[in-house]
Image (tube, rainbow, N blue to C red; front, top):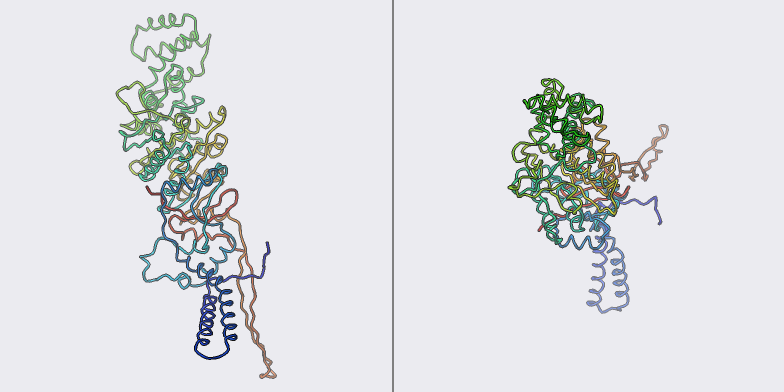
Length: 609
């Protein structure tokens, strides 16, 4: 490709080519008109008219190109798209994901932006400064620096590198989710949507896409504000090791310390009870764990020791009966102490159990001190078990009067379902964050199982809106290792600082960002976030004209003087996309770095029924 290093474009000047076209056409009209009036030889007039038409035709493409470029600075109207049109778009490229309409952002666009910003752009864009209230949010000319748009596609395998969507309130993050979720559903893929604020339109668009795809039964709904319509979600159903249950619940304790003694003690207490429940073939649930933490492990000690003895000792049942008879079948505390003695005197010598020893150690612990140490965890567990939320997160499999279906992450993934989880964060942000964190932790457990034992895996799409409200260490592991389990994440947030506040440190926040390969940024007004986005873009060089003038005179001969004027084409390094432009984008417009370095400027339509 031929590159002209001296070429300089200033498309915001007056359209001289259009003036030339008008003059040449007028000349041709005059030539042919005069030929009809006067009685002279025709050839000179034909030649003059022909030359004028030729010159007009020569200038016309240049005039049209410049007029088109300047016209698009006023912006394009808001667009809407139907579900049927989305189907057609993804059928054109079944191995790709459609990202709206736009263009690849290159050096010439940075140059055009520079030419606008170095002057009063109201003269270039031609908007009325006295009617600012009639304008839409943002500056249309940023996207208008390129008059030619095309459909933007990204290969599906490139989006497996995890995706971050940044944008301030109202910029269009949820509407982008609409398009991405709809495409995933129409491809027949599993979708898990975690929506803290519970956007009704997002939910209904996902439901409509599921119906349009011919499988309405794939849609699964969960929302604490609508328990009567919700599917019950077993948040502790999936785990590889029992210790994962304690880790999930202990992670809900907000602490800035990495080694908090209260968190560690709470983890140990929950783990002891969960291990004992599994030992007695009971399914761990938040309700059951809370009950044993509050009332004490007496009942669990009795059941766990009996169950373990019957399975690991000869005549274990008879030996237990002898110990129970000695206590006279007294209070639960006396029976539990009898079981403690039975373990220490009999079981520990024949078949010791670390799980039982942890439970018995907790039973021997001072009760008042124990209550203080788990005081950070119990309020959270009370919130997760209160009212209808408890029934939704800890479903009772034996309650046949409750006909609401029960699901979990593994069932959702195996059946390629569309799971919408609204968290109702406006009503109770603490509970919403805890529920979202538990759901993500359960998904991570399924991802680990798929990674270790899965074969011919199908893609799972995980969409997390307002990600800073639910993100945790489990999410970081999913971002880091989810690709191997064919789990693709789309995380949306407003600023980088949201991650910092949620995770407790900037290092943790950048640990999240370091696992993301694709960034889509809508309008962003936070300076730190703007700089993070543009720092990921390459630098470029822009051109400008330097004008000089000077005069020299001789003091001995005042009449002898000289002057000069000149122009010099200069280059300087500049940002390909300035951070400040991110705060000026229109709603539903974005700049994105995708597929390992491709920079695209796009705009999104609104999905309608």
